[in-house]
Structures are given as structure tokens and as C-alpha cells.
Length: 139
Image (cartoon, rainbow, N blue to C red; front, side, top):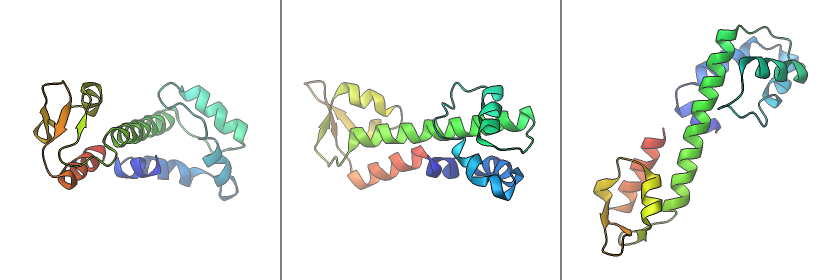
């Protein structure tokens, strides 16, 4: 997820929050992120988690909302990329994936696959080019 956070461009929001924390509380701040479901956590819940971790820095609601949103975006990108990589693994030209796996890939990959008579999808293009597109779309 760290890579996704950096590549999503939201690292400045995290950095700004991190820089507000006292030097002796940096580890506690990072530990407060453990186990947080960024898609459901509220500002008040995360503020309480920071307090319980021993972080005394003062954050506005807006700052915490932005941090939660950026972490949620990073988590989504990380999960999406991991899911796609699980599907394509070490796929080579001529290999096939199921219709269900193909639908999980989402839009943008149509030119790389051909629908086969049995309902599977065959990779018809250069695998390296396909991997590069997958990585680019994950950023």
C-alpha cells in the first residue's frame, strides 16, 4: 500500500500529517494506521485511534478527512493491483483466463484478449506490453 500511496500522488497529505506529529510520537502515529478500514473509518474513530496510540498532535476534521480519503484511495489501488496480478500471474501470449477473471480486470484491456468459443479469453498481444499497461493503470 505504501507504493500505491506514493504513486497515487496522495503522499503529500500523509507527509503533512506525519510532519505535524512530535518526533517522539512518529512510531505511535504509524502504528495507529494498523488495521484501519479506510473505507469505513470516521474522522472521530480515527482521531480516537490516534489518541489511544499516544499521538497528541492536533488535526482539524478537514485534515483527517483528507488523510482518510487518501489512505482509502491508496488501499483501493493496492487491492485492485493485487487482484489483477493474482488473475494474470505469469500469463503468456496464447494463455486463457475465465470470463469471470476477465470481468475482474475491468475496462481497458479489450485489445489484449480475444473471446474464445468456450467463453474464456485468450491473451493475443505481447505479454510485456500487457503487464506494463496493468502497472500503469494501477498507478
